[in-house]
Image (cartoon, rainbow, N blue to C red; front, side, top):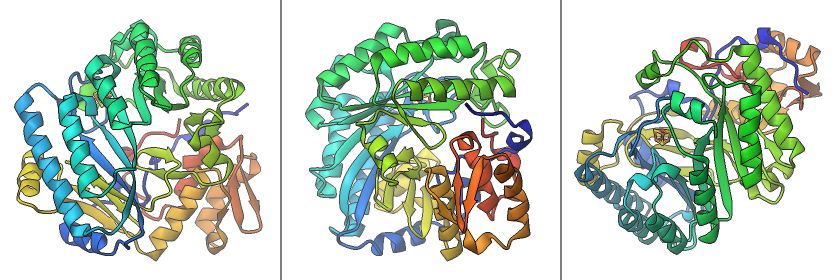
Length: 440
Ligand code: SF4
């Protein structure tokens, strides 16, 4: 059972899907650095690909993703043309180097594309990167996944799918602008399984307007009955000053911090009691799922897609705003869709912001990843740092972290405080706290 320490949760902290975080990106990094990083990829380097589809048929009011309405077929076609051109450009730079083991489609909602458009994109990626045998995963909006789509997912050999479920409660669905009846989720899960999708993830949320522990528990009941292999339980962050679409969500009945903590704890306890393995601070996986296996073997990694069993150190992002990760570089593609299309269609790399990771960044990134992924982190080099020592003290005193020699580890009790402990090793995190939300 977790204990709530409000004094330790007050500080806004990053989610650390990368270190340094995207808040550190600047125009000092762009396509030239992207080109050089691609040139350094060895012939046998494991590489994962991520294709970003920044469109959804309906925009949910809570959403923090870079996505817009897929209301004009011509817009999607133009974007897809540019994306396929970028695929050719990046693959051309690799010239056959790199071994692509995974292809992920996210967004937005990849199923804002038509099934034919999806097959065109997947075919282009498989051919260009010689990636016939790659594992394929996709994020899907159950509200708009048609029968044609299910058939195509089977034909394409998709093995993993992630569904935005958030809550089964109808009143809360209306309050957050995402109405999807329970039957729709049930039918989507059945159709995915029939097409051979062996790992289904549900994204769920706590801290929603009008939500309490009983309502969260009811959503967990529905979820457990469907037994998705993976569950991500995120805390809703209400930041309408950063995300104007959230202004449509009433703020007067949002759960307060103690109730949010109680919900996170309830979710953790119920899912673990049901047999799920807790991974990091917000992911859960059934014991046979590769993510749970990776967790048991200390192989979980954290990247832009969250906690993952993917071991590739190179992730190439394709599409507007997509981020590529190299050991020594993070680089984000052009955000403006018009400029992205122009650059991609001209055969250019479209990286326009990012951050180089020097050895110090890489060392700190490894510590932050180890802590968040449940491993012991060697913090010997920082034990003489008085600021870090003072910051760590309350967590050690309250049993939320343990230090044996130079090995720092977050305890089971400390799981919800992981990001607040990790931030102590973030050399960039002295300003801009307003850009982040609290850990719970
Ligand atoms: S479907 Fe997903 S990506 Fe699209 S608006 Fe809703 S939450 Fe955001």
